[in-house]
Image (tube, rainbow, N blue to C red; front, side, top):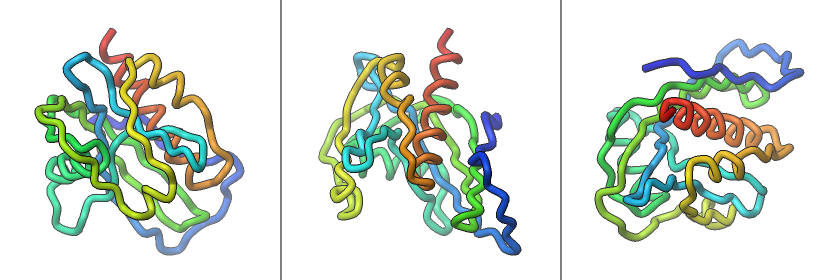
Length: 164
């Protein structure tokens, strides 16, 4: 899988003796109209794509299917690999490796958000890829959310560039 970007927040100088590594699976998820799923995190004012952590021993593609089911309420068929983004977060002493796939909805169902996701105000929206990218341009100030918004913006930008 292609490395799309390595993210570091400007000014981060902390060095960690022991970095925790977190792996995550994400998807550019397309419906029958060619629209992409993005999640409006209303409490904190940013957008993200469906995805989340890969559980211990879980296959990456199974994780992306699970996350699409939970956050978008959809069964999916993975079409292609999009790429990887690595985030270095010294403030939280971890590195996150996000694997992103392009997938199509095969069946719509019920969204199954966690309590935390409901508290953050997750709302699923469907937009053209270009409109989604425009909405995803906002960068929240919170350290953790800045990484999520920037990472998912870069994934969407990569997807659009591959379609040209």
